[in-house]
Image (spheres, rainbow, N blue to C red):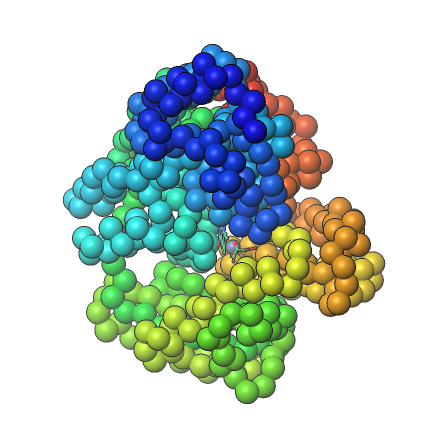
Amino acid sequence: MSHLNETLMQALEGLVGKAGLIRDTGLMQSYLSDWRNAYRGKAAVVVRPASTQEVSQVVRLCQEAGVALVPQGGNTGLCGGSIPDDSGTQVVLSLTRMNAIRAIDQANETITVEAGVILQRLQEAAADVGRLFPLSLGAEGSCTVGGNLATNAGGTAVLRYGNMRDLTLGLEVVLADGRIWDGLRGLRKDNTGYDLKHLFIGSEGTLGIITAAVLKLYPAVRSLTTAWVALPDPQAAVDLISRMRSQCGDRLTGFELMSRQSVEFVLQHVAGCNDPFKEHHPWYVLIELSDTLVDAALAQMLESCLSEAFEQGEALDAVVASNEMQVAALWALREGISEAQNHEGPSLKHDISIPVSSIPAFIEETDLRLLDAFPDVRIVAYGHVGDGNLHYNISKPVGTEDAPFKAQAEAIMHVIYEATVAFAGSISAEHGLGQAKRDAALRYKSALELEMMRTLKQALDPSGLMNPGKVL
Ligand code: FAD
Ligand code: MLT
Ligand code: ZN
């Protein structure tokens, strides 16, 4: 049911047309809950502007009417950041119709895209001109550039290319009062005062609406080697990545760690996935080496690192993919974890980061503490180990109801976050805070950091209408 006054509704429709407005409650549903169905809200209306000018005018109208806006891209975020509250008064501002690739400047190695472009389409547009756009994550077929920027997304290639912040040169942003900031500069050097784009990257829609970006392109990959390696423990992963980094340098473009439990879920729930080994092993890593040279000697490099790893007892078994299908099959085992975990009932996601060197001790101590307090929960630990980023996720005990597990969520989270902070880590490595981790961040960030964040929020969104209830 809509709580928005009819005059504003008419004005919005006048702006974006019937195709740009969703008022029907049934049609709105996919915009009102997240991928895991962990968050659900209500909205007065979903507005889908098709240009920066339209976004600007929608924001202006809502600002004048005192109506809060919730920006949304592909709605694949994992912290409830793109979901409105349950008041039914907020407007969901979907950027998905703003999906143009505006320009490619090959000599400058840049691409200018609108916020609603799907990440996979951006990767394909780069490939079409013999370039690479390196951001890569499991949701790349649905998430948008705007969402990637607003969450400062990470994924599986951060090790070599950095996160979304590192890949961005310029932004176009509609400010909370509707003015358009044209910061679409394709410059690798620009020291003219504060670097304002960085305020909006990672701000999860709380400071403004990102409408377009200038992003960096890289040379296309022309040689690739992918391996699946069984390990005795997380320490072996830390030793192996250090060995591989020193021997392969920038050619090491992927290094993903997975516990047996994580892989077990994928084998159970994702069709077509098979265990590359006959025996079960406690841990695995997926390793990718790549090079811009044709026929780079990657296989030899990998073999040399792995044979040393076998000698040192770091590796227990290994398979190397020998064709594209096998490469895809290995990545499916890794990328399928999120989906597979959904089949096991409610999950608690802890997207934490700690120094890479502390990962083994963190896992050992936190496993012990957690299982001591909650003996039957299932720990689904995996992640981008080269970035110190663990998805230390928890699934409910086998054969139990959801409710008792959900009732323990806060206490479970507390154990994990206390351990994270004790290891000098962060409670959000790449997914952001959204509504899921807002309160935890208020506990763990220093008073001075919170004061600076509130000062920025107040300066850029004095009426507090940009995605309220998220981040701060
Ligand atoms: P949404 O979910 O729509 O929005 C996310 C946040 O950004 C919200 O706060 C929203 O208000 C804000 N927002 C969206 N668009 C704009 C805009 N134009 N202007 C301002 N604010 C905006 N994330 C990783 O970092 N690494 C991973 O490896 C990873 N793997 C994933 C795997 C799976 C299977 C899934 C489902 C998710 C994964 N994610 C991962 C999380 C998610 O895909 C990313 O956070 C992604 O960047 C979100 O993009 P989106 O377009 O779906 O944003
Ligand atoms: C991933 O890397 O697969 C996601 O970021 C983690 C998750 O879904 O929890
Ligand atoms: Zn991740």
